[in-house]
Length: 368
Image (cartoon, rainbow, N blue to C red; front, side):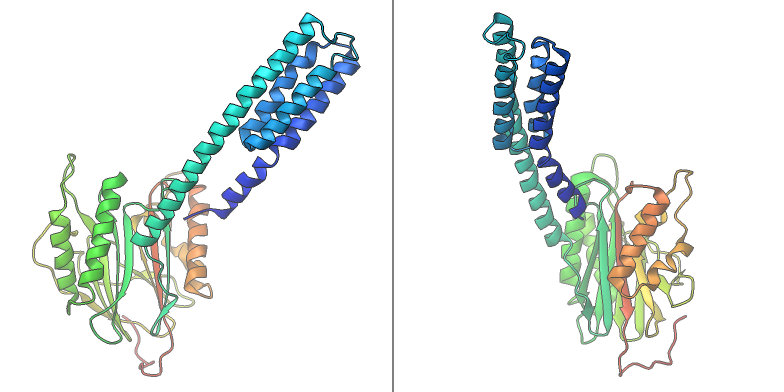
């Protein structure tokens, strides 16, 4: 996720460099004249180009450098030291520092441009790995959010995906968390998403999709520190019917207007993906029009405040009651940030779906 506020703030700061440098030059000259310091303060004018170089462009830094040099020369007039050895040496210092400031400004802007290009590559990679979910698919409204614990990383070891099933009115979703950190976790998350996209649209049964993902994770290279596995929830939606498989992952939360969110019931979670073995069939549930399901990774339930207390899921009632899934996810993220008092310490993926009215549904059917 990008933060537009941060980029806007950075651009605003860059245009403050030259004005700040010019104000600084004026202050030094006024103090020099008022104190009758006989050009002693001229050396401080060298700080003006450095001030501009810290945040402004090379061209505007050059303007600040020229202004500082001109001010240093003219400062010798009131004190009648113009052309003296002391005055020439102090002007030379200002000129030397100004040249260094131009180099600093150019090096900084080139580095920022490289970072900007890398950030763009990250955004493209994020869109390729974690595609934007459509606002609606059939009678289901959707929303998704991803927040990486690594500032500016965009992606991490958490994953989600939504694809149509192998038949009409079937929708399949996955959300998961890779055991591991860094680039290997991102690579495995990307591989799992790709395998899910292929398997979920052709396999008739959800446990067959889980078996395909098992095989994919098992084939991945093992890191030096131990076993590679992925916890995940697989969900199939078909009208009022839900089929859920938990592969070592927290079950989705069901939210109904005016009620506290509760986890979908079911058997004990199955093994995480990658550990092999026979898969148990998914658990069947139903949901009513207006119900919402929140699929999440452990970045939500393991978010801690300053006292080490975990994020209480009861606080999600109001955020999940927002007018649309995207607004609800924004409210959930604000609630998490308010709880932890800052940026997350772990990746967080959220996937929210809502059952919309459908004339073909039996509206009298409720969920367990």
